Length: 258
Image 1 (cartoon, rainbow, N blue to C red):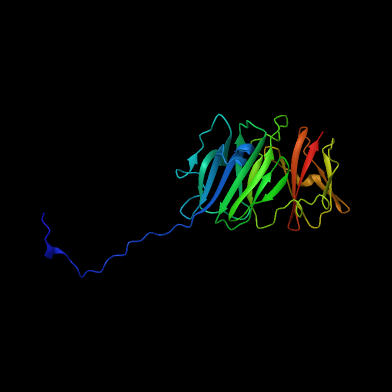
Image 2: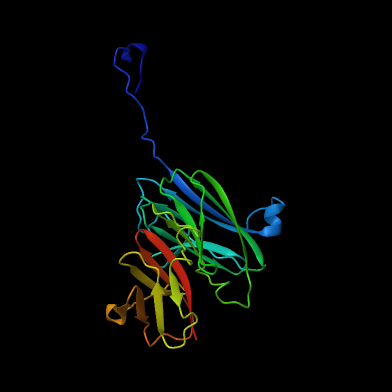
């Protein structure tokens, strides 16, 4: 086949060639040993969560499964799968990102958390310290923490979680230990009392692995302005977390069952 100069069509309108931009947002979490972080060394491990409209919140072939190391590991857990890179369609108010961290080899670490383009406020929840740390919405936040191998809750692989909430989660304003009291604590008879509530409250009890423990509504009774809760008699001795939401306030309390 031969093309000659007079075969050209020079008067035809040129076609526009374009691509549709994808609005990517990103969350990146790096795990550093503290001394190495101060020296500018590489992270021990890292995970990335990408958010764009073409992805799915379900785990699929666009996500990267985690290949674990013999040393420190950090991963995102979704539907029982451990991921090093997760692609999600969206982040909504109330979404939680479960992190799994294992194989600590040192005692001092830093999490460097970078967020780009995610509008909903994000918080790092440390279940061992029962604390929230607000994360920079467009930049990085460094969270320093200590590992004590003699304390199971300190090395708990489910210790950290990223929470997205339009309700401010802060230790000063919403872990209202001076306003909402849970007692006796420790308790040895599976009974606790809660005072300082301003409105009808919702309760969530979980163990240190983050597993929810159902509270029978029939086990909750009122004594004046105080609630009495009979905890499940099957609960074993140990430490539990009671999250209380009332009047747009979140209060988290460690409960020790002796």
